[in-house]
Amino acid sequence: MERIRLFIRVGQAIRRTHRSNHISALVRRNFTPSSVDSDSSRGHGIGNGRACRHCSNQLVADYVVDDVLYDRVCTETLNSLSDYFDELIENATELSGADVIFGDGVLSVNLGTDYGVYVINRQRPNKQIWLSSPTTGPKRFDYVVPPGQTNGYWVYKHTGVTLHQVLQDEITQIIKSLSINFMTLPHCN
Image 1 (tube, one colour):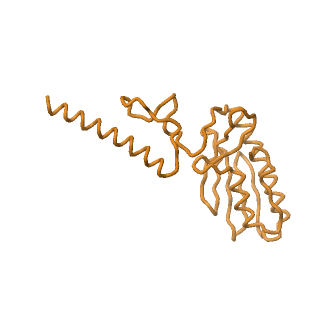
Image 2: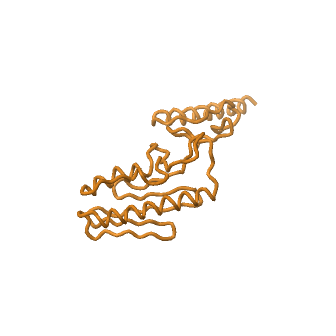
Image 3: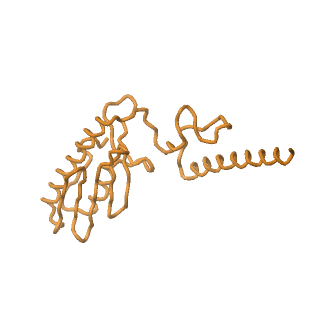
């Protein structure tokens, strides 16, 4: 009987240590848990109905985007980006062989052999827009509407940077002959 009690106490200690290490690892990475579980009988970081998977250095909006809003906002975003990239490629002197292809929720922007291909596509099941950048790699953007506001923006929750800001930073390094401003497009802020 004593062995069973000892085994149970060791198991509880391991679970407490594992949860503590998980939270401290998140803090070391500059992530702040949106909630910490005060009930140690549950083995998960759940408090106030939010799971620990919502850990981020960004505030978690209390607004859940429904399918209709996601489809509308995603379509508007991809259409405006497609039109803007078309305009940039048409007027940029330093891009040879550049092309923009948009269809079925996938925007492919080929900036030529020197700069690579940007792919921006909708991910309906996750309600995200994914960006594959030849410069910084893949990113997944969620549409976030801050509390008390009607319009939102696409944000990469790991760093807090917006889709339009990433494009602004990267494309201005490639196209230097034009004044570029992705921040005027819909759903950027």
